[in-house]
Length: 324
Picture 1 (cartoon, rainbow, N blue to C red):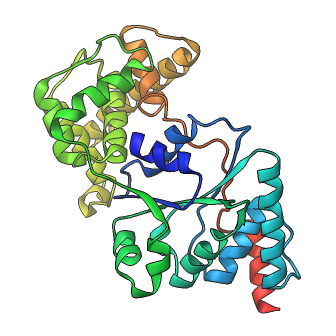
Picture 2: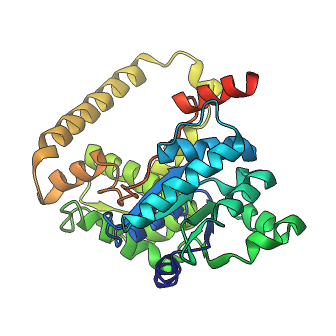
């Protein structure tokens, strides 16, 4: 984090963050952005990156609030430079965060490099964060046509999955954020199984623990052990497909038993809703709150960025621009 903070403080060039799906790239950037005064930094974010160079420029212009319809590429670049100069004169730096970098075409990366050329008084007007999956590093650092961009990368960081010894403190820390006081407790071997299933990937671990807490609340468990983790993992895996055997009619006694179980689950869900307004409640009230909140308070993401989602007005307008 300190290395990335140093890169951001330079106010220029590219910062590259890579990691597997669910490793926490966006969360890391969100934490970093929370250390910055929003009155001194304007940040925008792109998540629709399966576009060529010219379309990427239109997406960036859209996020900057620049009208691009009917504009030639030269006119669009002039408008973007003017916008960046105005931000700089107002005492604000501009940061562009580009997510899903592994989907960027070479032409799009080259357009980003050209945007980083804009300067005022010898200082760069735009800094760019590139977030992507591990294969993005292969493209960025080994493509012969991207040498000039590589020379402008001032900081890189690869997010590895958590180590086994990091899983327990990570889980307990997040539970503590929603008022957990030790009930339910967790056996040591339960943490081992959680790591084995999630492979240390935060998103997979969050999903597992959310389901595990819900299971514990429904079953009114005071301690969660390895067998409980196995049961929840089996449920998660079964959700990925339909077993043909499950389509056959169930015996009457199994239907009755299933109805009782669903009733207990509904009672647990109602309890969870009741405790939603409480703060720091102990025991299973806290557990139900944690399960309902999807394993604790989610880490804060970058609040200053704006995203361009597929199917948005800007995407529709680009389609019309290309067809015209």
